[in-house]
Image 1 (cartoon, rainbow, N blue to C red):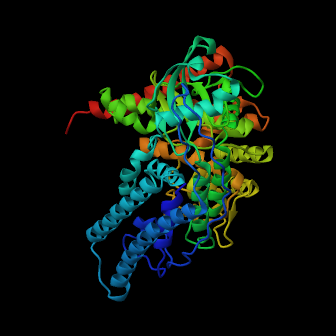
Image 2: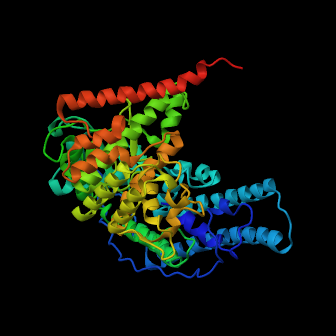
Image 3: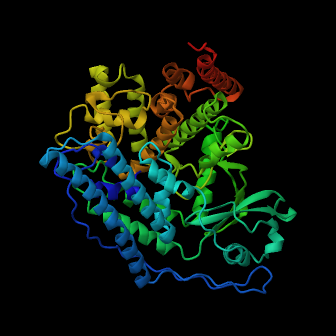
Length: 584
């Protein structure tokens, strides 16, 4: 999801239809600037909670008030006053290059064009970062997603926003304790010391909605080490107002051919998901349901979970406070830094083996939850993926989840099955397979422009679910931002599947950054077969060593272990052989 930055860049990149050198560096989008006016959808005020005393009853903590309508208007004005200059600078540069080449007949020097675009990206990234630092809220989430997509955005933006991934300015410890007291303890007639033997004032992490503290429960509540998630007071109206701004901006872009996705649909879906993120009772229920899916097959047989999901602590969950298992490790966003501390070469064999384990864990977890139950984690970014101390993977923050209908789930399984069984790739794909995939993609709800190539629907499906291919049907490019991307043929995309696409794009992006060719279709084939009521063994025959369809029980764990050993041996061999070759 490219969110705010790509929307802004999309506006800036519109021109005369000619494509001067370096236009692809502006995300490959072109059209004249227009329709910058926007209205903010009304957001209901939420009354602030009463200010309680802290756990000792001696200090009164003042809760922040929600934004007033005037303050929200001022916040919107700040957003637009920063956005317009960025738009103008990009458009001015694009127009300058266009005029010099098409009107004056100059032959532009590639190095000059590259340097000017880089200069503009650095300026735009700095302004965008300053805007996020000042406004925070949902804009921070936009920055987090941009920072996690090195395969889509200019390096200047990635570097400027890298620090946003998993830690924001925390609220004071006194305020966090006051929220815990009011929202969780006082209604149960408990004091802070009766529940917590230890409580770290400095949080482990702080995001736009909440922050998390390490604590130890008293023996009366189990005595174990836990994580305590505390919602920021009065944050809901601010974040919902931010989403309204981005929806208003994206609504102005509907109907422009070169904008590859209907971002109004994207932000509408994110708005609905964000509303659920403020209810920690629902989050605890989602955490429990998804955790259960990972440890048991649809038939109820136990299986080994591909990753760890924390469990909520019974009796210590409220709408704004959630006490749960503590996962010890580091977020994926800091994994490379941690490797260097431990003397591990990020490009060495150990790192490559870890990369495959990571992809296997995420692939299995999302494949099982999407295709088996249709209920899955909806906010997978590197700040929510944990690398545990033992090298295993953990998944946190279940505030955004999605449940798709059984009809969509079955339709999706049919698309995955058709992709995995297809013969050939790109223009060499078997015509019958191509037609089958395209028909199923349309039945899934994907809508293409009237003038799209006949291969368009199949190309979109391959682009979404198979990062292993080097070419797409119809001669389309695999790069999302290419002018020849099948994504630009999309006229509509089912809102229900927006977060499915977000999950697949995340896994594809991680594989691309790690240099691993990875096909979700082949790896999900066994699960898709099971979802369609077919035998999982048929899926294993196609997916081979990467299949998710190992039998359950001890034998299944042995098969899965042997597959992992095989993958690691292949990775190790591929890494070491070039090093062992004598230098010429």
